[in-house]
Length: 213
Ligand SMILES: Cc1cc2nc3c(=O)[nH]c(=O)nc-3n(C[C@H](O)[C@H](O)[C@H](O)COP(=O)(O)OP(=O)(O)OC[C@H]3O[C@@H](n4cnc5c(N)ncnc54)[C@H](O)[C@@H]3O)c2cc1C
Image (cartoon, rainbow, N blue to C red; front, side):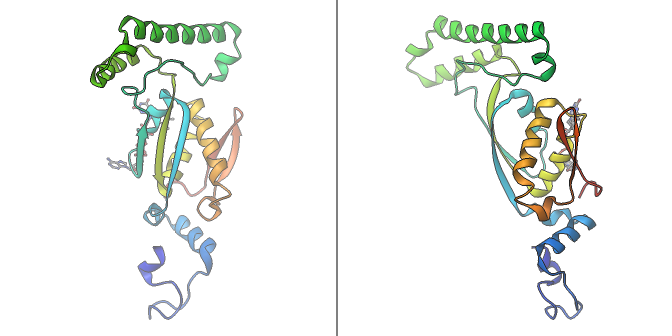
């Protein structure tokens, strides 16, 4: 796509061009160096982030440009078991961890009790089930594990990797995008080869000297 802009597929196609960069590695390195970010909007990746919290999905949906999302509907999908990402500071503190686990157990019980009170399993009309399920979810915690499908173009992927692995970002999303980077870095070296990784608090900080493209 980038090469069609100047007909720089090979010398001779554009009388103004006598030399072209050979191969994708050199070509894309230059695109990133000079910040021609729109060219890397063409390739798109699809991810399914399973068992991430609603905290993470809420942070993720703030990224608007170059994304598409499909999120598990908690109006349609009734909660029965609740699971969660446990942040390190909770996990490392016995009292905190006990409280965290107990809260989740209690909220799980709340979901089961609500289902019994409203006899939702006996309900025949799906519209009523949906209304009740929508109401029940309001008594679920924001740390609840859920699933989101997230698509992004490569320009957006770079932006979100940089933003969300930054040490100022929250632990779970830093962990998630550290995993994303581990998945894509070797697959797409021409588009991600300028990144270096610094470990902060045991999590990767993915950064580049180029800044935003
Ligand atoms: C560490 C951290 C802390 C945060 N804390 C808070 C917080 O306390 N409260 C809060 O509300 N949010 C917070 N956010 C979310 C943040 O403010 C952004 O909403 C989020 O990171 C999305 O990024 P973005 O604005 O770059 O949008 P994206 O949709 O990812 O857009 C990418 C880029 O495209 C351009 N762009 C996109 N849309 C437009 C537009 N409409 N007009 C012009 N240019 C556009 C911008 O250059 C933008 O940077 C935080 C994010 C991080 C990483």
